[in-house]
Image 1 (spheres, rainbow, N blue to C red):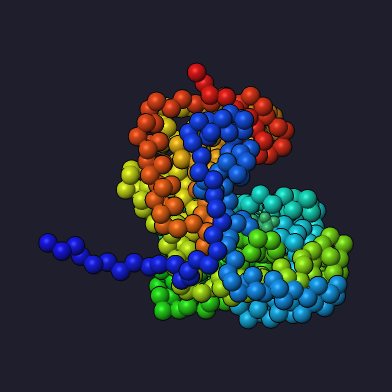
Image 2: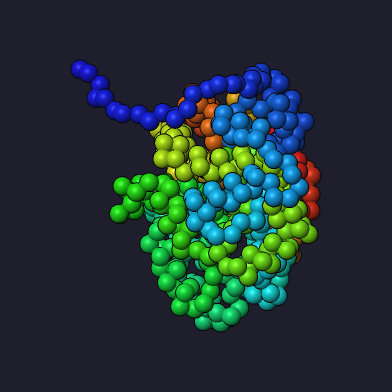
Length: 461
Ligand SMILES: *Cc1c(COP(=O)(O)O)cnc(C)c1O
């Protein structure tokens, strides 16, 4: 009997240059892990085979972007690459005014300082580390208004990034709209596992905020990935292009901060974009203090050129289909092997549920940290912990015990092949097979701030 024919997608590019990576032996990996205190953040990149630590700044640039690097106009003021970038941001996203910054957090700093006053409340669809910190440093308080489904790893709701308008309304009633300078709305919510917000939810948010005179500021770091899920899942969008959907998303917002190290396919860069002339005026003045002149914002001309070209490539239908397609391919392989992952599969990575994977290891023996170390030991694949270690301690010294205890497999854009995805899934499945023999760890060194970066562990005998 013939096998039914399915039609596969494939990458819309071919490979022109390769970067060789080191293949290590189990003994070499054991030594590297010991030296790193079983923390994947402390491994040397040279000892890593497939690196899934982050999708930030790890994309492969195209031949056009590299050619663009040679067109860098390194004039201090008025570089031609700035004007190109400005034109692309207007064309692709529709925002009127552009301030380049060295990366996303540079834009967050400037925007927070301009819009937030002491005592203000900033509602948002789940916090992001740097975004919330800048809001707090400016005197504001972040309030999570994402729907409840986002906190539930079992829920298969298709738009787990949506904002709960009732939660938002409660905040407006409690504090008054004048205390809320803007809603901090992210597309493809990072901390929820790359979960999208729907266009309907955005339209409803726009209507509500317009009525109350509140701005919507868009964290557009992964807007193209969000647009792909709208195209695939939301009624009325199947025939629209990613570019059209991206522009519509932006049209319901007043401004945006962007980390171009993600969607926009560059290794460094970001920007602030706004529609309001007054905010632009102030930002254009402030950027000089923190980043550089308003026509380079801490970037070289060549970086702005690579970003301008990368933005154009990032909204290509074939590009985004292959990008998210690769993530989904890996997720489905994991599911086939019975590995417990967060569903639905998000846009930028796979999140393995370590509580279900290693149910015999209590949370205070770090199941996700242990699992990340075991996967590296098995195959040299580097992942990271997103659980009790990342969550840190409360002011009274007790550990936060987050509901989600996850290992994150973030996929860099255009870097690895389907064969790499097979190796990752097979390695995870192999560890899953011997899960009952795995023991937890104890923490032997704990830094005071953001402990997950530098903490050290020891295996429990
Ligand atoms: C990475 C990221 C940022 C911060 O951007 P940087 O370029 O790392 O400064 C902000 N928001 C989200 C959602 C991100 O993923």
